[in-house]
Length: 450
Ligand code: 5AD
Ligand code: SF4
Image (cartoon, rainbow, N blue to C red; front, side):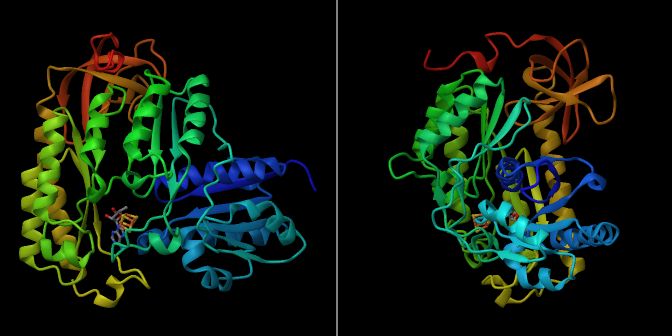
């Protein structure tokens, strides 16, 4: 085996993919590969892909053209396609051109070192089987030290929303053991991490046979009370009272829930197989707000699902008004082959999808602004993340409610908790100045059970 070959990896799509890239790096690092941030140094080029919408795939196909170019100039380079797209369109990827040497799906990353070695000897490799057991539980993700870490707690999804390709690309749901997650948390705490995001396609249905997600959250929050715990994504169907209580019971479990609703129309929700009605969603939001008054909620909305009428769309706008999310991620419906919705056609014209999407975005922008305005004059606790994008004299950081805050840089460090008094806001960002380091009266450092 050659030592110290270098690998360049690009990651697309969701946070699960970011976490998977750390697993991939760990696996191939043990086999003697060193990560490089520069394509022109790479012996191996990997791209960890997303298949959730067509535009993500098109972007990646465009990027693969660059890698083709690179390989033409450097014929010994190995090019591999990983992730959801690898699983979805493995044959097409292999046929895309001679330059793709490997296609490896999300459950087969352990094979990468052997597949790379085979590719060096001219053998192309496809490994895209899904597993019911693979959790990469024993693999210590390759992380550079920092303040924030992803911890993947489960893989796959059993929900089969009719528009979604994930159950086909990532396979059946399976959870890591609580004990192994706690061990990872202890290690992160020792290494000085300040924030952990627990990841899964549907974290609320976490179960290791003995413990559920509420048990896991409480246990993980107790590892280090100065460490913020975030989690995503939550499916409304599995958001139990026990889980809401668990979030409310610990101050270091962030007051932020990403709770995709997808549509406000019962008819569309049913066609999507979301398994809840608009009223059930409202009830859930009511229960959450009652038990966690400071909660910040965000959501996902798909516009232009097959057969969506103007009325369905208006009911979605109406739901946004009623719930008052702090933020929303909005998507144009993208038909995905082999899903149930694929067979429903794609009957909403592009310009209608675009117009509905703009209306959703515009409305949500006003709601977010209204919500943020209520924070002006308050002091919020911020975890410093780094320089702001716009100015080297300003830092950015987040509140526990996941709001971005910009403030003058003033001798503080990334990873510090600061009290920031909010002076002005827009729909996406809060702006303020430091009032001091986060004090015990600020949320984090008083756990309710103390
Ligand atoms: N088209 C548009 N949006 C989609 N999503 C998932 N599948 C599709 C699709 N086919 C969105 C959903 C999900 C988010 C991660 O991506 O809103 O919550
Ligand atoms: Fe896709 Fe639905 Fe599973 Fe989310 S819950 S990953 S939208 S199938």
